[in-house]
Image (cartoon, rainbow, N blue to C red; front, side, top):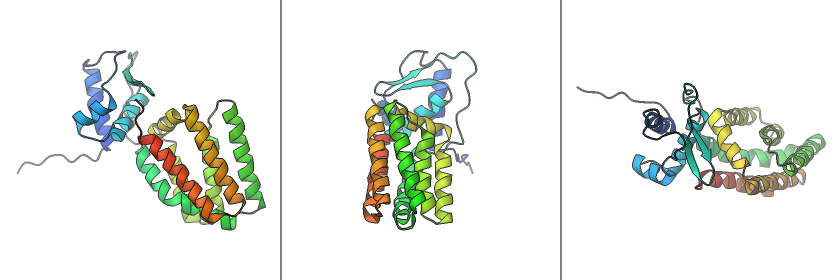
Length: 230
């Protein structure tokens, strides 16, 4: 009886490993552009978002440079490349779980937030607006705002789950993925406006409106993550 080894590696890491092997074998030379996401997805029979995660994993490993709106280019290797970020969770899977939990945390926060919490939210959105005006996007400020909302949901289990999700957001692939998004001025502005609207609705104790605003915000980020960058 012949058995095949079952791989528990994430799909995007398996895809990245195949592309990595082609690069190291010299099939694509330094400076050359990899095939488009569409072509890679078709040849590998996977989704384009999975290819995008794979390309970012290769970028984290120092093998390619991802240029949003252009494509991925093989880098000249000055030293032995790093290994692939095997422990990084899928950014798209993390977003799916956030979409399940954060809208409800937002609605709960509307019911339980106090004056101190309202002031904290207002200070955070003001800080983020100031950062945006300087062309800066702070992942720390982003997390602080979302975790402030989680704090005032007043449910320790929910708060711990969201804290874990945001810790995953700091992993190499997810962090690089979101940095690419944040480098797009229109995306930064949209996300900032979303944060301001969410905060206003929480401050006004509008649970229905705040939940809806959080849903719209997370849906926008998810759509932006899966739309083509080419």
